[in-house]
Amino acid sequence: MTFAGRSLLTAFLVLPMGSSWPVPETHVVVADAGITLHERSEDPVQLTAVVPLKRGEPVYLRDYGDTFTKRDKFDEIVASPVGDMAVGIPDEFEDGYDHVVFLSRTGDDPIWIRTTERSSNTVTPFWSRDGRRVVMTTEQAGRSTGFVIVDALTKTVRRVPVPGMDRRAVVRWTPDGRSLAAHYGDGVRFYALDGRALRTLPGVGAFANAEDVFSPSGRLFVTYCPSDEDEACVWDVKTGKNVERVRVTLEDIFGWWDEEHLICAKEDPAARYPTYIALVELNGHTARIIADISAATWKKLPYLSYTPR
Image (cartoon, rainbow, N blue to C red; front, side, top):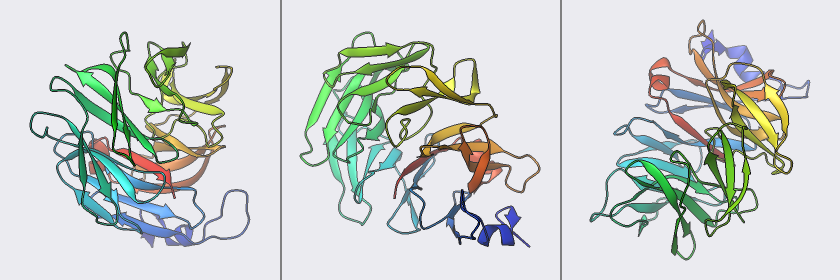
């Protein structure tokens, strides 16, 4: 008998990393999204949103518990790492302006906040680790031009243009929330909150497609390797030096599980569900499978948003 493409015995009698004792798993089916999660009570992070790359496809936001709710009319949604709040970017302008919408995962009324002037739009919201602020990249004619910071408590907006920003830059928080980071050329650049360039690390590759590219300690960050984007490269934040190269083929990288494991999409063409999400050690070993994804879902290139429990 099989469950989610694997044996029922494996699904329920599984061994935690570094232990010889069986640990039960809960299998959460994301309704209509073609994803089955394999979760444990001690997991440090969990999937909280599913965002298809293709416009017009519904996004799914996790309520408290195991229920995912389809949210129409949003391009992107991401849950706060703290509390019950989420933030979304609508798929259409309101009165000619782009907005961000603060959503309660417990059902309170949404709050709309204007983020840009008429000629610009905002993309890719990221929460600071303390859940206090959201940063979004501003675009004009498809080119990154700066960023917007919204305070989740006061709902105040700060718009910061950044001349000379990489046209493909996606702005995100650093772990301490005192600065920002984004793709720049063949590497990454760090910015002050007023838009000043602080530091550039060339040749490290582009940041991974993750809610948080920095390890839990903040000591490391992960990119797609500059010489092979199918592999992950791990770098020291302070020195900029390469620490590890995960020498296995990955379909995508969705962030850090803990200091020793990355959350990665991998493929097994012979499996019932050929794409799966795995915890991958920095030496390339697969430690555990945490989700199965149907072929039809993976064709939509979904962004999987993992946030702290």
